[in-house]
Image 1 (tube, rainbow, N blue to C red):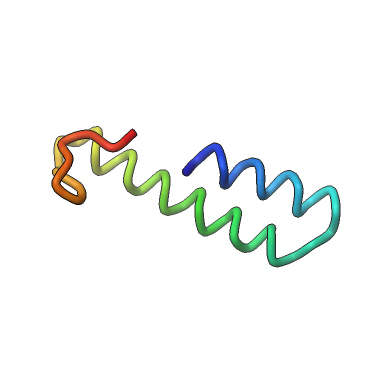
Image 2 (image 1 turned 180 degrees about the vertical axis):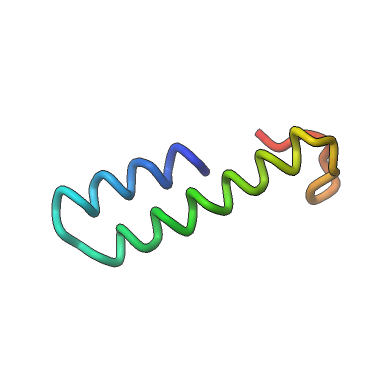
Length: 51
C-alpha cells in the first residue's frame, strides 16, 4: 500500500492530475499507520503482521 501510494504521488505530480495526488497521499498515510501498528505487535484484521 505504501509503494502504491508513492507511485500514485509521482504519477499525479508529473501529470498534474490532482485526484491521483490525493489518493496517493491517503494510501501512503494508511499504509504507514498499518505498518506502524503491525510493527508494534497489534493484530490488524486478524493478522499479527501486515505486509
